[in-house]
Length: 74
Image (cartoon, rainbow, N blue to C red):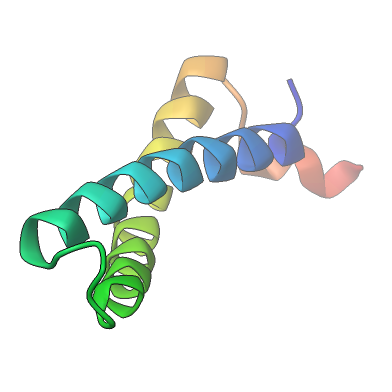
């Protein structure tokens, strides 16, 4: 598996996790009919995306035995 594919897979996994966590996290704080619900969901999604992206990418790179230096030759 190529480094670029690992990055895309980690972004997709992170986006799905962020969507679920931000929706249910905002639902715990606010009512779904509230005007601030979407704002809170957006803030939680941004925070969770930036928090989970690097560890997920690191785990996938370690699991697939891919070095970042291998892709420089491409």
